[in-house]
Length: 120
Image (cartoon, rainbow, N blue to C red; front, side, top):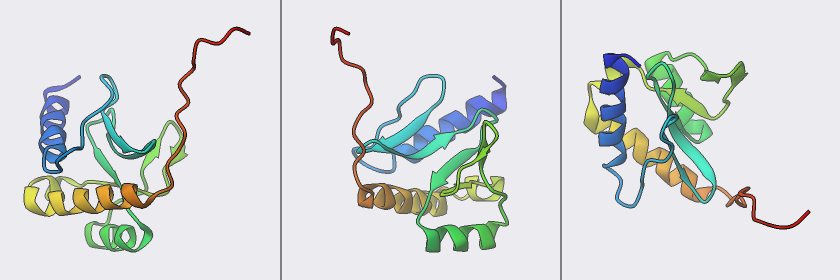
């Protein structure tokens, strides 16, 4: 991991702290989720990615001219990549994160996939 990644991780943690009750999950792959729905993550390259509803996502992409978010060869359709210009504006970034949190709260809860100790 580079110093840049450490700086981005610190920025991501400050961003998460703007929303009471939201906590970072994942040690190696930091992310946030509510009711089983992931709504933000820090990519391996240090890019902060947010899950937004369609209208806000379209506005975000038009405003910041961001490419689709791709992870492990797949496009993550509801996600946008936070550009460096927005990272510098913590207040505006916090508003985008609040929108992401609100969107996650509106999604149908997903059942957890944790395995229980059941005999086979």
